[in-house]
Length: 145
Figure 1 (tube, one colour):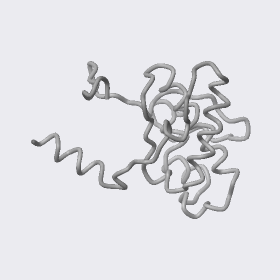
Figure 2 (cartoon, one colour; figure 1 turned 90 degrees about the vertical axis):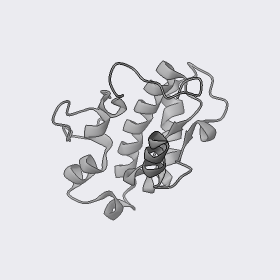
Figure 3 (tube, one colour; figure 1 turned 120 degrees about the vertical axis):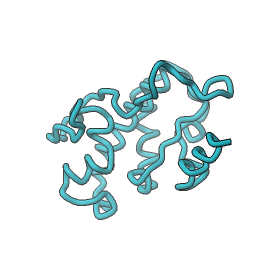
């Protein structure tokens, strides 16, 4: 959203295909067939399952898994923030069912940002969707009006 309107460029946005720096403890090359080490290729549910051979929900107690995940998500959030200056960055989807991931991502985001830009309240910047899992259906209905 920009000035209350959906931002529309030449094509639809592909926010998941930005390249991120690999975590030093992550040998996984990525699951994206086009870019490998883009955020989708490294941080999606598909990437987690291909990297570890298990779905993320079965890795809930493995803090190293989520530390690596937060590392990638925080880089994406930092890039979105410095380029777009959004009021909110909404992280949703199956991976974000790991609620501890929000705080881990916020902490790494602030570390990566390194004071470059002011963030009054990172808890209000990087947030969960307010519509649970219904945002896609509600958005589609609004587009049909």
